[in-house]
Length: 393
Image 1 (cartoon, helix red, strand yellow):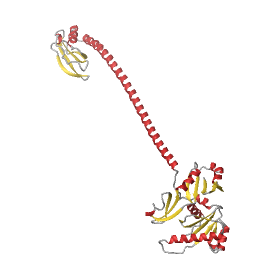
Image 2 (tube, one colour):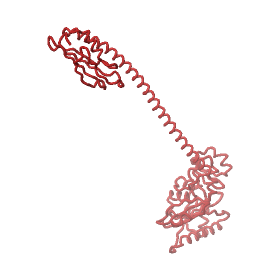
Image 3 (cartoon, helix red, strand yellow):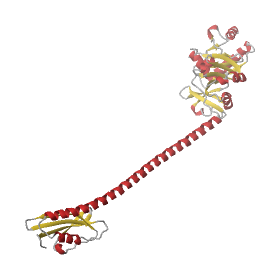
Image 4 (cartoon, helix red, strand yellow):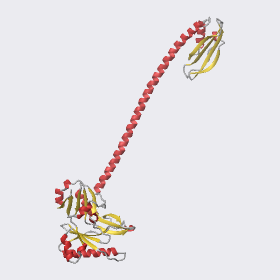
């Protein structure tokens, strides 16, 4: 992280090493080594306004940031958009992490050194070697920094006195007049001695700080920053957001399509598997029916052999002849009632659902047969009961 006071000259703190360079020299020597920047800038204005005037404190060509000073009082700091944009463009593509107004960074420095007083306003005269910058700070209250010439101390004394009067007059607007006590802080010991010689301050009211650029130290701790982004960076962010949205939508669509295809493929596979199983089941059903027909015939002849003396050939012929077309034998049996009587019971049913319902034909040995409707395999069939004496109809 590089800390910079940006002006016509750049005051740098690079890994704890201070440097003062022109913009071209900074670009040539240091810019390629910068990864990110925290910068301060000098040219800004400060106003104290009430909440209703907060939005109109500065014209639209300014970037503004405010902080609450009281119940209904705000301190507003404004800077021209062109000045803020110039800082960002100079460091591009190095990101400017935060851009802090000079008096805010200076206030953070004084607070860190314990040089802010409740009953005194601090006049800070900053010796930047190329220029002097004058700022008054009283607690959290700031004034806009003022550049003054270093041509002679007498001129500097007059500028300090004028700045004191302006500050007092601004404070007394709308408030009861009161005396303001000042002390002066500077990083130039010779100036402080000269001010004492001119009678501007006593030795008790001067404080020397040993730092070539105090703002850079305060910049490390300052929390207040101007929020700004270059127009082209805003457009890039919008494009990136749009592209991310499109990619997200495309990704979601592709995932949904892939899931849909997987479900379709699974359902098709399941459907084909069920179709194969159904065909196998139907084939097995036909095979079982054929085997049952053979078994029924064998079973019928077996029963005939075990029954009382009966004309089995005629009985079998008359039973088979009486079955309507399209009907199958579901079961049959012969039971001996006693030595001279026997009973024949058979069940027939339609082979298919669309077979026309017909009754068993009463003929031959089955002329006096007893018929009863019965449900067999979900279809209306018939139970055939024949009771006869052995060897006779």
